[in-house]
Length: 150
Figure 1 (cartoon, rainbow, N blue to C red):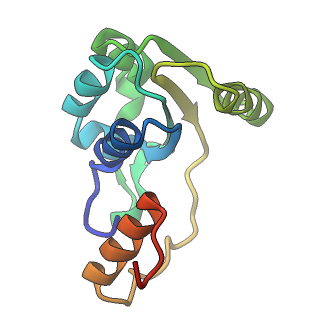
Figure 2: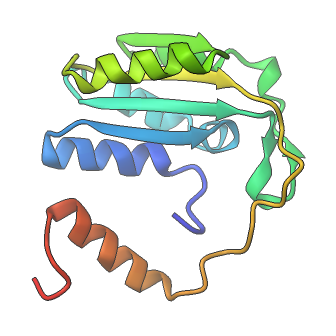
């Protein structure tokens, strides 16, 4: 996903739609705020087997920690208004774990989970060193269940 901030939900929705299998997206508040229109697309697909977890630390952590001002916006409310049939907010790891476990058991329809977390002071680390087209090809093969030769 290097260089694709704002597209995690779109990519996840595409995979869930194409495969029909359950997909869990781990997204960030900055990413969601960069592309809120995808929430409307996902909300328009009531059978999409998608769990969209948003970790909200109030910053664009991968680009230097600039504030997102997410505390001024109700991300769960935005997802609900966009049509997600299931929306929740939590800051409790046990509640998040239990929710994801229930979802993987087969509950249909998109779920949006807003999780406020503490901002990290750790450096997010370097960008991926390998060529991005190689990562894209490997990702596609993995989604389609193909081997490197297939």
